[in-house]
Amino acid sequence: MRPEAERRLREGFQRRVDEQSSRYAALLAHARQQAARFECGEVAAVFTAKAGGDVPTRTYVIALLPIAGIPAAIAVTATGIPGTLQFLMAYPFLAGAWIGLSFWLGREPKRQVLLYAFTEGFMLLDGPPADAMPVPWSQVTGVDPVWTNTYRPGEEDHPRPVLSAYRLRLADGRVQDISRSFKNVQDPYGEMGQLFKGLAPGIVGKTMPQLPTIDEIIATYARTPGRNMCG
Image (tube, rainbow, N blue to C red; front, side):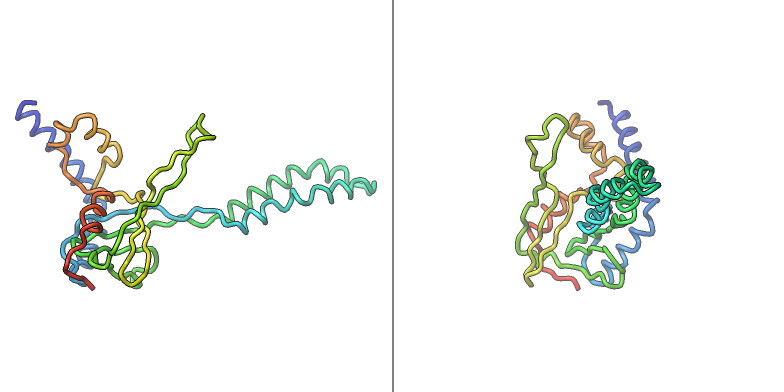
């Protein structure tokens, strides 16, 4: 690639990153404040992910109650009481509405989770910000992979294990899971950028700004914890 073309490509990539960073300027500023407050070094990256949205077991039980009531509805109809036949005919529609409404109301609300990665620790914000405290990388005694079975169309009988998170074991006995769904807020390309680097590592790798992924943060800091402590 000619130097002029390489320069333009680099400038184009950087312009997109700058635009993305400006959207999260307040969040990046807050991360820097926390790094200074707890003396956790520099901000390595800020990540965001969506959590929640699961359906509790209790919701399944409530939602499927109409199915258990089918024998009773048939028995009532057999009594010949006026209106029971019409009720039986409407029962599937009423049950469907009940099931849909139950799942809609019973699903856990989705929420945004933040992770501030510092050079000397990390901070997970999944609740009131005032309750968040940094965890020094020096307190990480081990990192274990967390695998989740996933299914692809046409391969239902053969689930494929996928690395979904990292389980950090801390010196005080606690365990902290860090999901791989965390995305760098400054990265406008995400997984597409990783694909570009894989297809053209020479050109894209030299010109695209290097923004760490959650995998790289864990590999750099959690697996080789520093000697300094923040907090």
